[in-house]
Image (cartoon, rainbow, N blue to C red; front, top):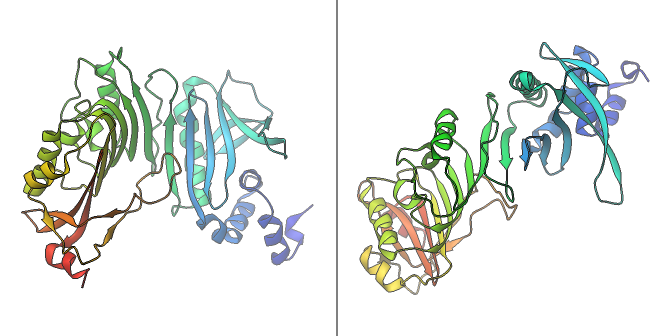
Length: 363
């Protein structure tokens, strides 16, 4: 079938019924074909939520289309040179491809996807060429994410290629026998600031450096045995923190809020939620010590919620709502944060409003 012989409306209808991996492969036919696909599928491409490179449990990487429709674009496998069905010129780099069949566990059964094969020595340039092509083909309005997920596996430092216009989201599992702090800190310091880090951390003898890039991640989601390792309540510089711990000294919670109120730290913080699983948080003690203010009990307080920087568990695109009659005010700029304490949880939501503007929300 020669597509160029058909009217534009027919071409568009054909493209609309092709999946993303087929469109991607078809784009290599010619420069004109690539331009035709891009122009006809512009609206469809803009509806893509993100393109995600996912490395799960091993260093074998898959590329996924996320959004209203989910699609598996390709997979990467490290193999010796010469292991391929065909080659394509991808941004000036000849790259090996094969078609592979996989079982997806559904009624559909098996599906085909093409796999990129590369020798380890060419890993960086292969990922770079593929990423540059994807970015050119799908456009720069899409969120590109490199995600590593080693939950259930032993700690390891993942490979992260140097790619332009991409966000990094990694998981880290630090058990009691963790003893590789030097290499982990080197890895973090040599990487761009992370968009999100998901961690499990047990007690260890060696703490993170207070200036560690770990604390600079935009978002952190962590379960830790002790809230002092890592010490996010003291050193976090990002925007959103979701913390679960077994025990937490109430004095550290009080100190955290007081530091925020003073304006000396946590300047970028938007949202913090901490759950303490083996203790209750003394509501009266905390609210009294932090100098919390109260909204008239007869009024309905405003609801604080924000888009999540990254949703690890697909629990929803927004943070849990905070509806509280208590709040604190930052001294340096009069900004307000809602404070909600519920038995074993403290939620802290910062408003982009002065106290006067905040109180007007209830009028």
